Amino acid sequence: MASAQAAVLNAVREPLSVEPLAVRDPRDGEVLVRLGASGVCHSDLHAITGDLPMPLPCVLGHEGAGVVEKVGAGVQRVKPKDHVVLNWVPFCGSCWYGSANMARDVPRLIDLYRAGKLKLDELITRRYKIAQVSDAFGAMEKGEVARGVITF
Image (cartoon, rainbow, N blue to C red; front, side, top):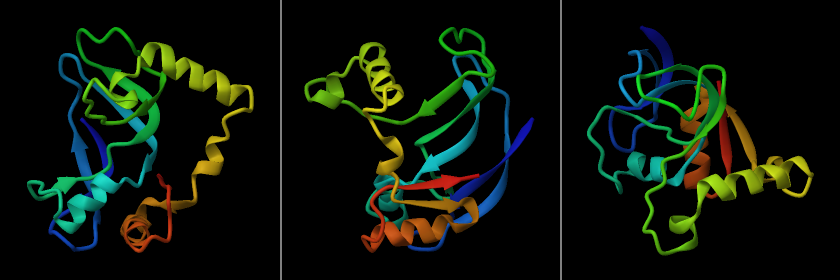
């Protein structure tokens, strides 16, 4: 069983706690990713403020980038050592975001980035270490940061 550090929300409107966490091996259709960075997201902020009720305690952070460590049975699109970007995106199927074709659109974005026409680093307004995770959400709530990234 692997281990990780996690940003845990134990109570609404309380600072997050960075805690060790045991991570089981992936089940059928699941992938285990070692994160290198995670985004500071408004849906996480809404969980902290209680506007998005979550069962507590809960681990926050659903946007990230890392490397695949293990895959469960039946996983065919990625393999260990693949670099991946993670995001939870509910979609409606009718707006641009909900109707995007990931197989078509993501490679286009990657091509733009590689050609120097999409400057992703300029979108990051502040970087935080995982021990500063509560500071990152506090800054977001105050409007001091637009796009923060948590590094491990």
